[in-house]
Length: 188
Length: 426
Image 1 (tube, rainbow over the protein chains, first blue to last red):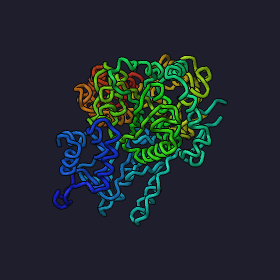
Image 2: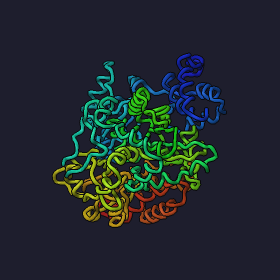
Image 3: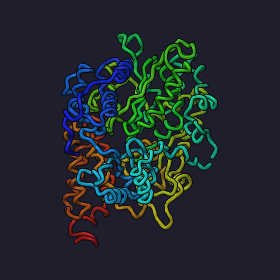
Image 4: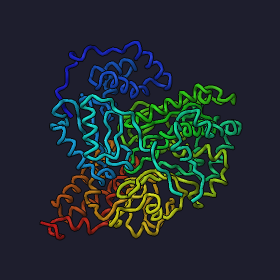
């Protein structure tokens, strides 16, 4: 995805807060090397600043005494570290085989039409970013999508419309309730 | 069918993920017994049970544990225990349910395994998309620490075990054990050549055991009931129960625990609810997207155990992630879909895989769109043959096997799509 990214200057300086520093100390205590903390710190930074720009990578590099190029290599290898901003609601629709067999392509086309997304997946209203992703390990409740952290399973265009309306109305995203909580168990 | 629910016994119980509920249902009850045993005694039970790795390879778990060098040959290096919770193989979704419904069972299994391995540091490596599950695991770890079940001197036994959750960030390849180790160390998740095997030289160059979530979750039951009770379930060479995740064109997709050896068609009919009305079976991928596809005739003669599927269909039980396809399935589109996955997920380290997966995907797109010739199918087959076994890790074979098996077993579906052939050809 390429976006008109805010410049580093417009996002303010990158420094850890005292709370973040305390958390970093806890993370470092779990590993025998500082390098092992690179992914936990990338997650922490993404939670705080929404996406990983070069300044964030430099901050992590200096915190962990690593070359900035190493942090860049790791951040770019893993697809979940955002190298560009996404809109407030990031809808990742699984389109791998099990989902595709039960209508993932129609579902994603419906979402894209409904949200009037551009070639980068960003919706006309500026609230949503839509991306097709590979298997999210929710094959038994296909088709499905992950919206921010939450799994929405057994979706249909009708259910998706309700979810989109709720998000547009500013309603709180419900807590994730994977299928297992209400699953019927093996027949004997 | 009557059999003990070794893995799913607490599913559906309200708040089964909380320590008080887990304890009231027997979780951690096996710990005093296990911590009173010697490491060798625990390993012997696991070995004698015949438990095989549930991540997909089916390697005997107890034997894997014996590959860790004895203390005097470790030069003071620690042993690490890693739980592979990177569940990413298309069609596989059992470990997420297991961790969501019963995180304490996994933790108990890891504590017992750590005792057997003389190990004091463990990590649960979980895929980034499962952050909501990771939070639940972290909460479970906190509860266990507060109750003295993790940390120093567990239940006064003198055994120490520190456990934490490490969250990945969207790379399928990190489910491969050496890639998982690279990722944990803070590197790109790229596999390493074996040997040395992780049991000898793994995380931070120390002996490391990597076991799947389901494998580790079986261990407490083995301590409580013994190896013979486990061997009494399933088949001789594939003992015990296993979780099967079934998806695709069935009426009741989901996760089911069954004893190994159940006829595959019976499983699809009785557990997965059978096909939709009026449909017939076209194909089944039995063990996650990487294993060879099976025809209905093969499905009819196979049982759900490692040997039967291999002998009768040349495929693998793998992770138990079963994708069922009925007669409405476009087999060319299905294979194209899978190759898009492999082209996207190749880590880029080995040339045959990095380049070959993309080429296979591009050729398949042209076959799907009726723009390919019969020669392209020959090229596709050659590519698959030239990737299989010619890469550092098993990913190359995992991308090649679907191509080889689809082209062999559903040949006419592909011939119908190449130029100048078939009713639909322009």
